[in-house]
Image (cartoon, rainbow, N blue to C red):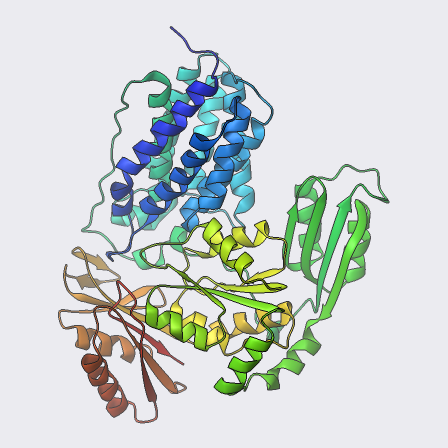
Length: 562
């Protein structure tokens, strides 16, 4: 008997089973992590993200599919963790928008929702990369659109979506050659397959068998540079400023517009991109917020006014700002702390870090709120939103300190009503270094530019143990041995931790290096840290060393070179 309509009950069952199926397979998704380190968390992040969505659906008193879809989208948005979780939330944000206002849905409407979810997710990622969860979602939706041309059976539609998802998943190694070398498929794409399989099982009550793509751990070459695990970079050095005016406007759509043209987000964003760089356009049905670096701010104003009143106008000459701020970054620690305290009502600074020692270090550098999280537990979008709101400040700076948290931080920044600058720090060392360029007397854009520039002045090293045998970039790694990871690349391996650390430092120090900072983790100790520091100073007499207690998990030592 065919199923032609999905009601509230069927939709609830789809979400419930999908959540359970993803939870049951989270460890497997984690196993597809490209690095042999004990913090592979794509499965964990997607699972916690979807659980948040399911919780929102379960607690909703909605009577329609459309309203339940909105509850799902909101729960996913606020619970999104890591890049995979954020993209998953964006897929179902578009999915829910497509179903808005619908009491029940048929096969065609469901197929359209899958397709609209794809559009939303591609729009959310500045530089979409094929061979990832995006590809799996797109091909799955294409199979679904083909299926509804021949049948109005919803079970056949969802089966087709799963088929398309699996076809795309199997092809991800062909689109990202590094996956092929390793013998794995994209982990986020695999997580999405589990969600779609859960949808079908929820509809039919029949368990869905899934072919699992086991990782071939014997071939891990070049995995450290896997494109789909690199965060998008959209930043520039202030020394190379081409478009010198930081321009911001807020448009009240439709109010005294100079053009009768209907506002089209894609067309508008492309036009803003054409007028400069570092652009950001956030829009809803009533307001459009624009940030762009341009040489012609008057053209930005004129174009924005076509669609409504300009409720906010702001221009900063970044070249003058840069010249002014260069000599203002040499505050002593005592002065910096006092100033940050006095300016708390104007500024809040939020950092993500795990470990009591790291928390104290960040607070000593001017951070007002530390979110506990990082390598082993990425905070959700909602966690970051709450921290921003608790800062009780007119403007907030966020330091993710982990490449897998940057997207969630950016998403949180869009959900609050105050200006937020997310500094794309990928490591604890980068986060601490950027704070040395933080000036509570400067405006948000000035701080953002200077703090982003400071990221390039530090080299970040991490010592951890290998959880499996593998080989990367010709480096043979033995399970249980210690690895040295420099700015995301595994560069050393040795059974002796101290030797691995010193070999790593050798690849970090150059003739311009001045300071080496060692942060002791839960599994490190002061005696060993002192020995490492002594060896560094003997080999590099012009370099000073500092040791601090960080208490971070996973990494016995974090080492920064400046």
